[in-house]
Image 1 (cartoon, rainbow, N blue to C red):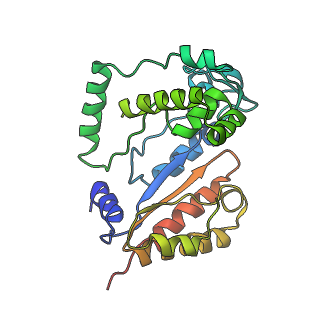
Image 2: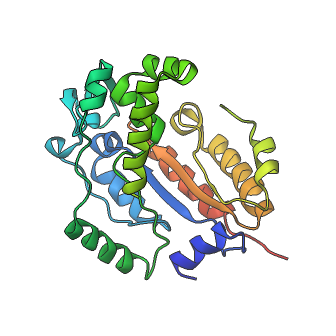
Image 3: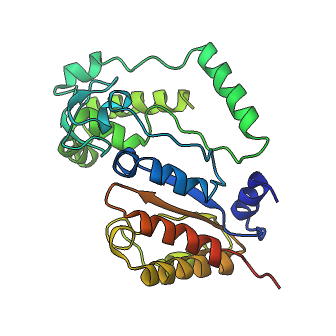
Length: 264
């Protein structure tokens, strides 16, 4: 079973041979662990994308992941104290409704860029189930990165016409470019309906769990979202600089060990 078939079977709840592995690594993790992390990841091939990784150069980090204050292509100013860690918005490009009316979104991809992307996707689909994003990203996040969090929340309640016009304009742009829940309850609600892309606890389990605790947690996730859900689970945990390499290994080892399904 190749990676594409494995991923498709998990998405469609059709009993893959094992739980697919997903790599999700923040730049700071590579900057902290270097080649040791790259080598470790190569032992657990990614079933949902490329398994090839490299250590990013500081100068190549995007503005929202670079230390200091840096503006992105939308005019949002990001501030971070650590390279490779997603920063916080320090300033917004829009402070008045007049600025909102005059604001120009970044250019959409041209025909040449779209053609290259289609070629890349077609090549990847020979072996992979491809997942693509788009430049604005999460619609709500982009909205508050442009206007400010407090402004957006206030406007969602009061709905001034200037806000509605701008929100509609951003939504149109997005369309053109294309709480905490109890896990058992969530598994029950999604079982037989959805494939789950796991996000192993980033604040507790990934940075602090012992090998035994990690194995127990991953075994639990595989049982409720994989074995009991016709294999509908992707084994993923986002790796940051605070995750020890031993825990990275323990997580992937556990997904490999417990993700070998036994179908009747």
